[in-house]
Structure formats: C-alpha cells, structure tokens
Length: 178
Ligand SMILES: [Zn+2]
Image (tube, helix red, strand yellow):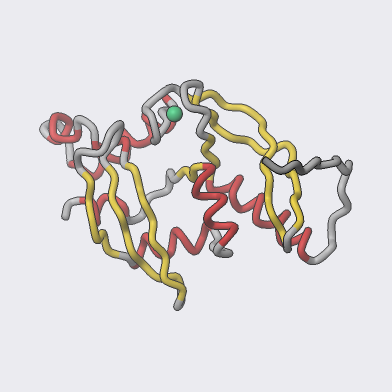
C-alpha cells in the first residue's frame, strides 16, 4: 500500500462540492478529515481510477469514524520523476505544481478560480452563503474549496446555528410537485 505514506502530512488539500455537502450532513469538519487522514489507514486503493488514482481511507477523529475518498493527481508519472530526486520531495513539488495548474479530480478538466454561492441546509432551512472562493471545473462544473475556505464556511454555519448572523437578503423558494 504505497498510498498510505503519500497521504500523510499533506498541506495541499482540496475538498470537492460533494465532500462539502456530505461533511455538512454528518457534521464533520475539515480539520477532522485531516486528523482522520493522519491517523487512518488506506483500506482500498483504486490505482486504475481515472483521471487520477484514488483510494479509500478509514480513520478516526477522536472517536468519530470517518471514511475519505482521496484522489491523488501527483501520482501520475511519479515513477519517472523518482529517478531524479527523492520520491517524497518530488511528490511535494509535483503536487504543488498540479494544484497551481488546477486540474479537476473528477474529470481531469481544467479549473478556473471564481466566486460562488453555496447552499447549506441548517436545521431544516436552506441558507445561501455568498462570496465563497472556489476552483470550478470548466468541463464538468465540479467545485473545489481550499482548506481555509472550508473553515470559513464552517464558521458561518456555526454563526447561523447560534443566530449570530443576519441574512443580507431573503429569497423566495418555490416548491412544486412532479
Ligand atoms: Zn471536472
């Protein structure tokens, strides 16, 4: 299992929109995911996954069990680069480079930085958080949020729960049936 070592101590992590939604549902914070990755184990790897190899990791944050699917863009061409420098250093450089280049972990398309709105369900009510920085895939529309941005979203969720924030506008939502 070569994945295990590669996942530890990662500074450059991005969360997909799907991850954000699942995390909110289960009340899992970005830092808990980091903790689970640090003390967890890869239980399945999907080396042939496209566009990037990925794996399923199981770990715990305190007592909370967390499963994480991680895609590893830097794994591509890793063998070639290992010939020139230590694999870990090359992984780090390659990871930084690919993070800058901005590739979508879902389809491999290019991503563009933008400002988006995200919808959060909090105690049965829908809230829209404006001004969220994201990388958006030009091909499939997947969004990725940085660790800092995830923490900012979580802080706003907390404020909404504690009634410490006033909406800047209220929109109507129409519901119809099929
Ligand atoms: Zn995509």
